[in-house]
Amino acid sequence: MPVLSEKSPVTFRDELPEAVDVIIIGGGIAGICTALFLARDGISVLVCEKGRVAGEQSSRNWGWVRQMGRDEAELPIMMDSIQLWEGLAGETDNQVGFGRGGTMYLAENEEEQAEFEEWLAVGKQHGLDTRAVNRGELQKLLAGAADKWCGGIYTASDGRAEPFQAVPAIARVAQAAGSRIIENCAVRSIDAEAGRTCGVITERGRVRADAVVCAAGAWSTTFLGNLGISLPQLVVRNTVARTGRAPEVFPGCAGSHRFAFRRRQDGGYTLALSDHLEHFPGADSFRYLFKFRRAFNQIRHALRLRPGKGLFARLFPQRRWQADEVTPFERTRVLNPEPYPWAVEELRRRMAEHLPGLAGVDIEESWAGMIEAMPDFVPVLDQVPGYPGFYLATGFSGHGFGIGPGAGRVMARLVQGNPPGYDLTRFRFSRFSDGSPIIPGPAV
Ligand SMILES: Cc1cc2nc3c(=O)[nH]c(=O)nc-3n(C[C@H](O)[C@H](O)[C@H](O)COP(=O)(O)OP(=O)(O)OC[C@H]3O[C@@H](n4cnc5c(N)ncnc54)[C@H](O)[C@@H]3O)c2cc1C
Image 1 (cartoon, rainbow, N blue to C red):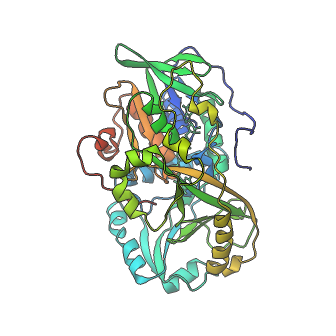
Image 2 (cartoon, protein in one colour):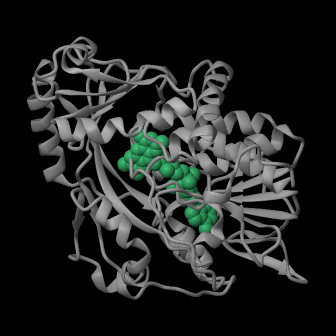
């Protein structure tokens, strides 16, 4: 399936209603799964997507559905999310491409092994099957790997899914449950009456609703900025590639601090450099520098600063607009960054170096995605303080695909005023302004 762009055909084209119970801004995995669980509870829902369903991060990701290595506060949601994936696989005749092939973190030296093993206590506490593997066992699990890795940690119950297929397939389930989904329909702003959210203004007109969920991925800061709300979120580019069919070396997802790969349903591999995250500095980089200082420090081995082209536009972005004006969301229907050619070549080289059994396998396609990140690498799942009826599900920081179904169910419960089923303290919006220290969780 090719990478989506604004030239891709429109497939979700429901009628714009005058009113619904809940409007969701953004048709990525967070928005679509929120819609699914709301619709199943009998709530009328509209999803407005400015471009294509899953056109951005939700189709461009590596496809890891991983419990291992998570922030501890995310883990209970993620452990339930993987069950939800299993259910979605059953309901869609596995068009989501879900499978449980396991996840492995690969250590190149004893220091990395010790670093990975620190997480074992978290997994154990939650009853997860994560365990350490030594060199001998690793060579059995990872057929044909070079002698680069001295061990690692492994979670057999972890999964993978196919990002290009999964969210459109879930969107069809959500539609069948009663959700309306419209592509090429940007939300320009929210509408409020007597201090309460009462709908949205889209590029096609106004829609009334009791609640609005912003699940706008990398656009959330821009959307909120127009309302005068500050959300510290920055983006990095990551280049990804896929190979043609190749022998199976491992059925799941595996990666070191340098190189990551996942077995695909079509018999190929999705490849990425885990040490290559490119940040294009702009006004928000300076604005949120202090909040991100620990996060930057944590990923400094992987972070590449790219001031270059387009600096002026990034330093002076459009911050405010009226609801009758064309907005940045309509000007970029699908955020479709170019893959970095060096990274594609480097992937080819590292694949041959680390997995000699796959040397010479063709790279058939490459693409890139802009990953949005919060200063503590965990999302915001909350109602926006001071904006009753306005909710946020954003900032999944490079690991929102796997947790997407679980996060969607949490949001559906929050919007209905039901207990979310988890402790969401770590995901509250006010953590960035209430003076609490910002402590980053695991970055990947
Ligand atoms: C290269 C890469 C690798 C990754 N690997 C993994 C992985 O292996 N496992 C994992 O769990 N996660 C991974 N992630 C992260 C994961 O893809 C994201 O966390 C997740 O997809 C975020 O989903 P979302 O719905 O919040 O955002 P998105 O998928 O970005 O969706 C947001 C949507 O909102 C729309 N939108 C924005 N503003 C408006 C507006 N005003 N009106 C209407 N629509 C709007 C956008 O067009 C977009 O489609 C990766 C991400 C990338 C880019």
